[in-house]
Length: 485
Image: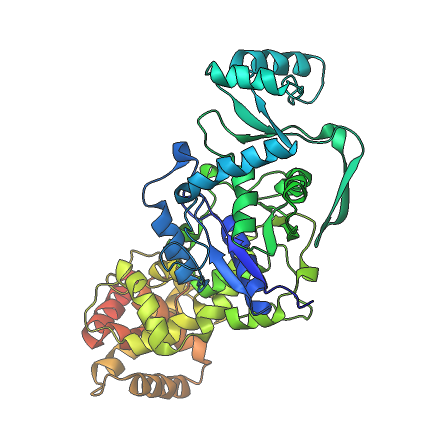
């Protein structure tokens, strides 16, 4: 028999931002589909109206598009198994639940809230797990009809076996066996007629032909109940791939509430979409070779479920930053200028700025675009600095030698007809030769005078070119004045 075409789905709830763990699930779901020439489906699970956030669906669309995770079927483009928004599929779930009742795999439960709260109190006090006690499980057909006719509110519960075990296979965790006695008779249809998340999930996955289910390993404990539903209907059970959580540290999950970054936050902090996706792929998955830098097409080729770890993945901001730095350095100069310009303009408003030269200086020194404003905040205005900056052991400079050097530099640069980097460099090289000193002896005082900083992108000559002749000479005179005092 020919194997089924792979169909995977990413099924987020529109509850706000896209957190890192959620985006990683989307990525793995996409990669598994594309690696197998399959179909990647987007389904919006919006039945929890209490948590619904206005505009959240647009955030989901926007994030997936920005990261290149383009869906083949979904709410906005349609497809053969729509609708792709769960709230638009409501009519079908109750009939499936009633079918299970007919087959003896589910039952009507008329227990009210007070009874269930009392039951859970007793179970908790006895140190037992809180689960439904099967009170309505064996009502006769007549009793059920009587209660329905009387209009008593009800839910429909799954009838789980109470003896024996249920075993299922997961591609990451292998075969897992669960004692049926621990399974709760979960609610399938709530009192308001709406399906529970777990039930809607199973029905939607089957009716959409989903072959591979990729989700967080917190769903491992629910999987036996999912499988009992599939078996009750006589449906094919999908391939399960449960992925480990993404943690802030050994004890804490990443959480927006605790100020941990969402995808949008990372982009706002100056990270590149491609770098974020590359890093997220490595959170819980190990490629076969040494290389860790992959474009999305390369990830499709490299990705293998066997590389997914069982252990939680720790989000490492330093590693993300290093990977982002690799991507920044690979940008063409034009793309670097385009991406860097908003950050350059945060601290530098100078109009006649040589962006080509500035990009050459900044690109090798930028890991994240938010590094830029602080690196160039001296261009618009010279910061007030201490003359101790002129003392540099390695360059063999001090305040006295620096004053003498700046007095030599000033007339040379005043007389320079052509204010270009090559001319400035040549003039300084001539001075170094004339004084018979090392380069740093001349260039360190120049850098301090024109920047007022210890660390700058580029040295004194590049900064002089960026500042222009008048501003460079003004700053050198300020340096001479400071040192003369």
